[in-house]
Amino acid sequence: MLLYLDTTRAPNPRRVRMYVAEKGLTIPTKELNLRAGEQRTPEFLRKNPFAGVPILELDNGTIIAETLAIIEYLEELHPEPPLIGADPVARALVRMWDRRCEIGVYLAASRMVLNKGEVSDHARKTLVARLALVNDGLAGREWLAGQFSIADIMLFIGLETAHHGQVALDPAWTNVSRWYAAMKTRPSATL
Image 1: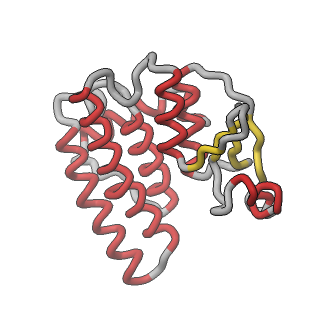
Image 2 (image 1 turned 180 degrees about the vertical axis):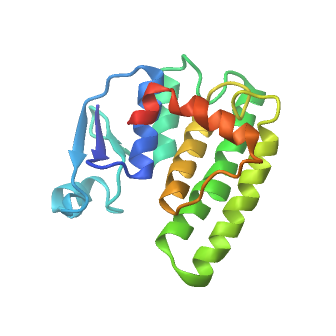
Image 3 (image 1 turned 60 degrees about the vertical axis):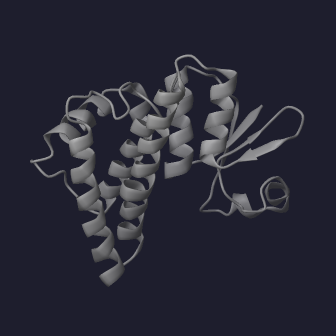
């Protein structure tokens, strides 16, 4: 098995790095310099014609692309500790919060950072509104879905992206602030 990542801290490869660290897995990696275009070489394009990372190449040559697909494959192989939930309700809650954080926080933050003008302004407003809802969702809970999960990793990636757009946490978001402080103490947050 070989995990292809980037040499920087791009969001999707970082999400897989954090997941692997949280699981305590050791997977051989090959880092690609995306700025140098290593993901566009003929060799890599045969593996992933979408020219993106991360991808996971299995020993039999099977290629699994896309962050969530890689995470779900690894979760099937290594169910402990469960980061996608240990039962149907927990899995549904993890996937619900993961999706909310991907669309409402990470994608909004990305649109804000990568665009200018009206698009960026709209994305910032969406991000602020979604973070207020996430703050409410964290009331009385240490982690989004009850126990630490991939949803927490996704929210962390979203907040880190938002910080590139100079979005500070609103002091009224005490639950998100508490949660973010706890996330930053996890060793995986430094990856």
